[in-house]
Image 1: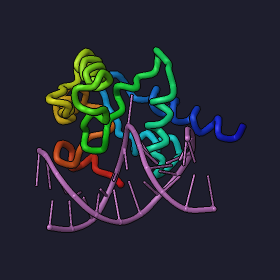
Image 2: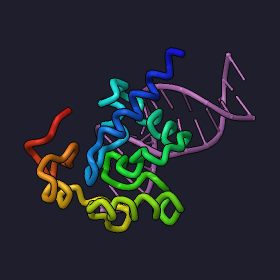
Image 3: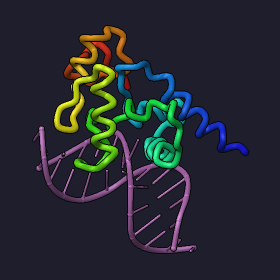
Length: 119
DNA sequence: AGTATGACTCATC
DNA sequence: AGATGAGCCATAC
């Protein structure tokens, strides 16, 4: 089972995201050592059912929720994020607010943190 | 084996 | 900020 490690690494990367922080699918994939596997991350999340997995901290690269607006997962994720102190507005996550609250953010947009820009 | 689909990303308009 | 098109990876049919 060689591909088990891939899924395991992805899950580990997701669990590695601190509460109140967010990360994009691509970032998770990259962190898991699987560049360009953002879609794989999405598929893993969709397929995996772990109550302890902070799947709600995974967003699109735009900082927006990946689910279709109005869908169950959409509302669920928004509610969970808000519960962790992340500012969510109309399916959009304000990473600037999160960064302001938790100076040690895992990922932030260039507009909010020009110095933290990478890639 | 080729096509369609998806919790994606990027460049461009 | 929002919409479009193209690229990319894995799965399902």
